[in-house]
Length: 91
View (cartoon, rainbow, N blue to C red):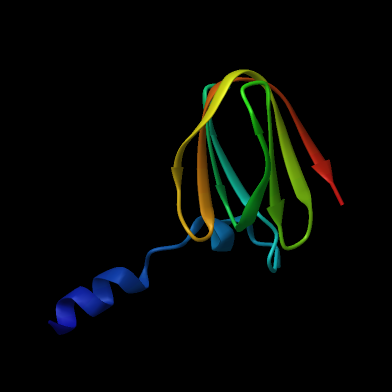
């Protein structure tokens, strides 16, 4: 059992690998312009097929495009699919 503890010690989370103190800033992962995962969400403000607005602790993140849909949502993570043409950050 001790072996598994030491194995996980070397792993680095995406927030740690950036090397900056991002605090509670949202973490956005993109797979091309077709799939986006946003960690740090506190709620969905607007949900339309061409515009999705998500609230975070620090800002509102807006995704614009075509055929946008929320594929998965949890307490702090949202996964969006569709054709993303533009992303806006409103502070």
